[in-house]
Length: 380
Image 1 (cartoon, one colour):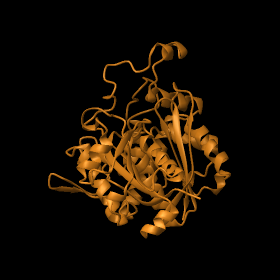
Image 2: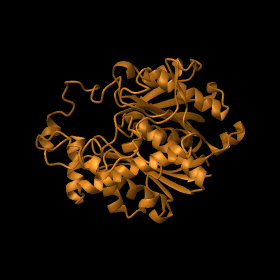
Image 3: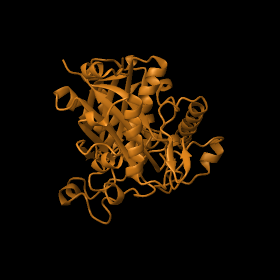
């Protein structure tokens, strides 16, 4: 019986907007991650059946099937294909789902799933430009409301009764946890140093130290004059890439590879596209129901910190133990390179599970259009 196992997972550092990674083309950034993945695994890339690469802004430098361009830019054999995936912020988590389904069905024996976003070079929203992506049917159904993630985050805060102080406290904790993880070397085993114009970038750039409730309170609201969502309690605009190598247990044994974790359960869910960011809640419920596991059996959670209100509402609805959520910080501190974030979260989760002997981990993230992927991993 075929399964899907992760045998290696790596990521670049996450660069802040116009920071250290802004000087490297997204194809070259991805190629560095891709080559490090197979080097660490000890696998000849000619064996890879496909590269499934998440990317949201598939325009300009990230256009024309960036996955195939990454494969060729990495110097891999021309026989290795690649395809780009866009499920908004969950694009590279969806890439993992497609890869797992491919190896379980027998379409693949060895596949790479990952993603990239260079938001410094391809700004958010570039793919639609001035075009109207929704259509008249959408406008009529939702009474002309144009979905806006920041406004959706405000709606969540209002619906779940989350105060500005709670959001800021959560955000400060994200930076504190990320700083502690960085200082303790918890990210070193997962990060691929990136060379940019003679400089080596080897650490996440977005972590801020020494923040206080007072400094957070001084930041103005971003989406509503009297709102609670600010740049300080939202994810950062970032550059970054991550990748995972996926195969079956049988193929891993044949190639002499040691599996880290099994893709136990993989689901996707939809919810209200106007509030947009609530789908991790039903996605988590769907994953738990399909897996037969209880939330108390999950020892680690990665819930993307698109805005602080998202994981806080998720905690309120799921009853998960807050101590097991984003223990190494999240996108508020580390950054959110859209198409690369799903694979970044999963890479961090896989390493955390292995380092701490945690049997089950769950990842979920809100996505444009009111969607969410949820993945349960089992440590092997």
